[in-house]
Image (cartoon, rainbow, N blue to C red; front, side, top):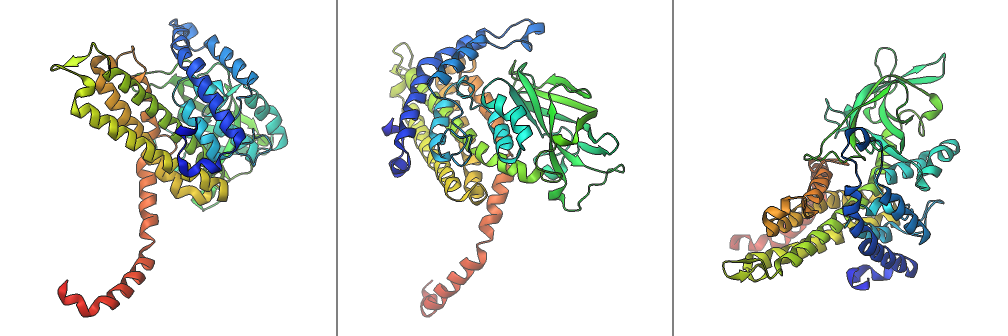
Length: 442
């Protein structure tokens, strides 16, 4: 494993983490990758069963992984529930998991559960932890996060419209609104939804005029009265059954007020704490998918039966350059993510926001480019069901939208750079003063 870890960070990885990383890599290669085909074959074609059952291969994988101690590896070491790894160490493990469809859930490290478990661990009270965090960490149930809405630009969370009103007589919240692309809500094992909305009075007015103090996160048991899963949304033609990315309607859905997470108006605080580590996980999984795509491409271009214009594919200059480009892009992107993870370990998610944003934009794009080159090298087979490449591309394409679209992160990065103007101007003024006698030469 040591040769896959950038030299610059080797001294920051503990012996325990190195050992676990080697085990994760071995498990992915010997158990998860072979199980991917079995998993999809076990999904029922019967519409009545497609969303009601889950492939049994997954429980078999989870049992094996748990027995080897490869379980809940994602929670950073500053949580009491943590397995003891830093964000940096887990990032390397997440890359291995991203090479395979079954990998993340096998180790109980799959989204959206990882983010939701971190919400419960960081912001939940003891009752909420007992009811939901324990079963989630045991892999007994799954969860969904309901934030995105169809009819607003919900990449700006200030636009979230789902309304949460208070019934003082019954001490309940009443939810009205609609969410979509709630990942995992189709899973028959999904038992809890975390729902983001605005607590408002009877006239629809929020308690605070500050738009960043208007959103809240509440716990809704899955399929609670007043809630209804309308449909599973497609992702580039895939329905992702039985996991699903669902549209959910809330009409006078009543929940106890004790189901509020952290407090009213704390939604922005919660999602920022949730999304920072989650973005790192996503980024490293995309690089794992990219590595797997490059592996398929290298295998393909050495196939002796594949000759074009009298030469093996590997002997064509375009192929060689595309492989080299993929290698450089993956390695560069990996350093971005690991730098962000290390900064999170040292100073926390807030201090690493810019570094996380860079990785969040770069990594999915690198992954898509690498997979696209791999697909191209396979020709028609690359877009077929006979390789995992098309499905991997579709799944990773969503990450340019999930957890904030590219444009949001890029714009924020640009604004951060522009704030350096005063310092840069001061430096330039000093420089120009020194070279003023020579300006006529410029």
